[in-house]
Image (cartoon, rainbow, N blue to C red; front, side, top):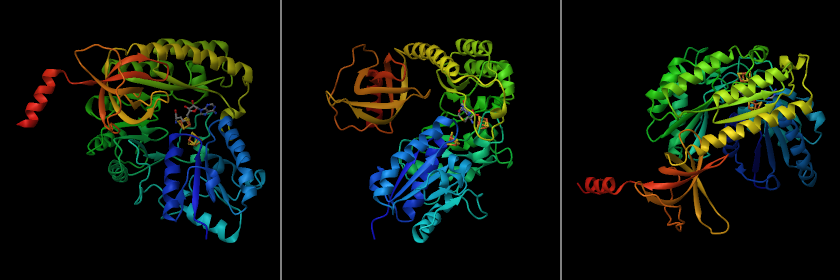
Length: 475
Ligand code: SAH
Ligand code: SF4
Ligand code: F3S
């Protein structure tokens, strides 16, 4: 029998990355080795995203590229899972004649059985059914792969908000929260596997536990903060309508909670926000941002914006630009609106032409680029604590450059060339001395600010402090 090898390709959000990791664990428990290219595999799994039509197109062009592999080796099993699989179901089998398996977002736990059935019976199978009782695809189980410094933990699934543009409630189902004990158990396992930072994931983390009457999100954060060996906590996504005073206070109370919040605003026009069913006004959003900044100066605030929502006039769009000028986000993800199956806005009239959506997106990104750059440059000369995630080598000089993020989630690259606090000098290259900084918290001084990242130089303690350090170690 040939060795069983699986290749997993992920399209989509952090939750999909998390689910793909889970797929990898499930398949390795059933005897598959995970490989990193499709041509080495006899099982190819594509975990998909349906959020915009672009993501869906990406899937079909990927499947087109995989077709020759299937022709060369008809025994290779090709499976599609995730949000597009949930949305399209059996119709995917007719659209893609060489596809063997379609499994939905709640069929994850059944995947090993489904793959066995395809292999044994040479059948084509669709499973987009609900999670079955007794099945618990939310338990971390015995294995945690990944092993990176920064790892994801899904704390809730699905969404009940029905924003009128959004497909998530249809492909991920109703909002359900995982019990806190299970989350803490998983985080402890992840810390044991090397995690120093976790990002708690949910479509609307602020409403964590409400439905099941579990603990509040702020209380969950308090418990996560107590996990030994964990240095940093992040979370995403917060819905502005549910951003509570209790959660805002948590940034002050919990030392591990990073000073960054992703707060998608979507539009600067109250008319559009209403048509999107976002259930807040721009004034409410601006008030929450002002509160966060008053309480925690320097906190990073990032956001998502959709341009060209049906009925968005030039004046609505200008309100969005004005809002961006006023709020000055640290960075933004901006998207052209696209119709999604089942989403209410698909039926809305006054659709914006593609060319106009592209123009608005460019204008918005140009404005934000300037703001992000100004904000990053304003950090020059400041000290930042960076959690090191890894390193790269510059090809010319083979110098090691370490890379990590600040508490405010900005990427910092730096060479491990400590300068003293009280010295000012230019960066100097130093050959790597085998000192692995991965997973460590390193203080750096910011030297340069770019659009996507910062350049820093690591800092040693001042001579007096380091002498004290030696004395206390000797004592
Ligand atoms: N739950 C999160 C968002 C998840 S989707 C929240 O409520 O903010 C991530 C982003 O994709 C959204 O914030 C939105 O900006 C964008 N998006 C969702 N549906 C879209 C659509 N139909 N067209 C364009 N962008 C969309
Ligand atoms: Fe989609 Fe709105 Fe739910 Fe976010 S809150 S996942 S945008 S329906
Ligand atoms: Fe995409 Fe599904 Fe995530 S639609 S954004 S992969 S929840």
